[in-house]
Length: 409
Image (cartoon, rainbow, N blue to C red; front, side):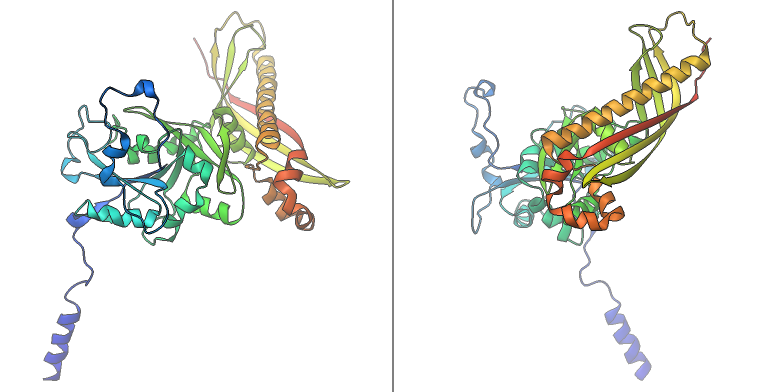
């Protein structure tokens, strides 16, 4: 009789998971956008006669808070699974329109966690974040500080550290509102774009939530990619410089390229120069490989960062080509020198901007000093970004090798 009793007990305990939830009950959050609240005042000339004020339109979105005033507008993007296999034809921009594949729900409050729970009063689905692809923060939020709004995502066990983080120029929600032409969901579309950094050096490809957490915990400055959007298209354009946890300024596409080159994170890209052979002509180099070595030199209590950049690539294009009288080997040697000067000029100008205007070490020279000159770093670490870094000397040496020249007929 003992054996049947044991089997009966096993059946009871192995009957299933106590917290099992069917897939139909889950709301798979693909993207999150966080904007500042209240929104920036709309221009009067853009307001239509009789238009409902934004405060009345968003009545369902505002939650009653225990303390304080609403600070954020949290938008989550959920896929409408029954429509996921149907192509979106002329989908309504704004997510959740009749032809849209997603439902973008916005909640207003002063705590990301409480707003997330408040969303449950507006959907029958349990929000599930393990498939989260992107977090988009508006530039207003970034200038106020990103640590507070990311705290929820760093604590919740459902969040993956590989979630990509972007800064938007203007409203963050508008990025999720895009109805992409080649992807079903704007969140998936945006999350895949940094893959092209192997060919386009002007986009930041290392944007993971985990890396941001490490940088902020170590008090390192860094850059985040900037996303701009239209109705059906998103572009990653340049970056935003983050000091501490606050955005201090914009970084142009060429400056982003220089930062990646100096950080030894350059995967591939294109450099153009004026032709040394013909006025008005442009020469194009496809950079296929780049490596940077930085050596700190300390003399008489002054720091010099010696930056050695070695780049190799292919002679890709000659625009406005004229009669070529120069020997190929001589032309290639001259072109290598021109590309070297262009790369060095761009890197030097970018460093100077961060030293004088932003006083922000996004190149993370501090890590090199900390590793190679720990005693000196201890002495100057407290004044690094505000005083030492802005007055630091920089020496840049670039070595370019053109491997392939191609052939024309």
